[in-house]
Length: 432
Image: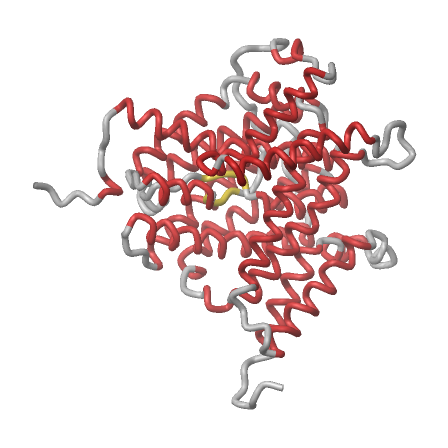
């Protein structure tokens, strides 16, 4: 009889492969969504979208292997799957649109270094980011991305031919309805609901002659994402600071995910475990500035799969990481995504970004909003944070460097929530 913890259990190769592939399928919708939304927001070419999908899979695979197996004090050595942090897409878009894509990746590099270096200290300072701050920040992240998803469905310019066509909106609505139907009638496929919705919408688009399948087989079969695809990173202080703020939000999210997986596998989690996980995320984010992708964080849906399947071995997620890594060498995976019509992708993205907002609202539901202190923090932060989303020209009279920060709903709202939480400290007075 051995004392091996289930997390360190080695299981049969066949079962290992099947369970690992299942994790990849759950990961894949997220691995597709972030590149699609970023490419749509920046008007990137099909070739660039194919590249983003490949690099995303590469870094998802490397990060998952690192978190599952660990190297020195990097990686938590638990069944965790790393994926592109959807919360990073909106602020990255703001930086790229305010400066350029090279500045966006320079800011990403610094934010990754910050995450890796600050990991041990941050693991001990989580009390300064209570649910009232994090719930507000994550809600703003989801809301800020809604216009991007809407643009994928209806188009980005009202003056363009076909803007807001009923056919495009109908196709997006079909994807939304399929996602809802899967949740209602196919509970065992809920983890794959977005993937099923994309497949259904694409099938209808193919039937309507809106998909050029020939583009999938055009191009190389094998490839490797080349470093600095969009050019060498450049740096701007305001852009970097705005992305570091988002990185702090992601660090809090990562710390919560480590605690969640610890509970799911029945293994105690301490500050050193949180720090090890943050170092891994920071290292992969640094690599993302080289291969030019996104910020990275543990995926909650894969933690949910561990809870559902009761398979706690970290070697399962390690296999998932290896599969994602291998897939990144096949450019046709990106070409498959590229031929999917924008309204189909937009329908899935709309639900996904709204889901991000709902995660924030769910966190806020745990906050006592009968306490006027919390009510003021949420109200003021949301009000100020949403100004540039509902009125993009709101800060046009400010200096360009200030605009970069102020036009990010997430950055402004998070800072306001953080400061108000410090200023409006609880007192012994009775609530009003």
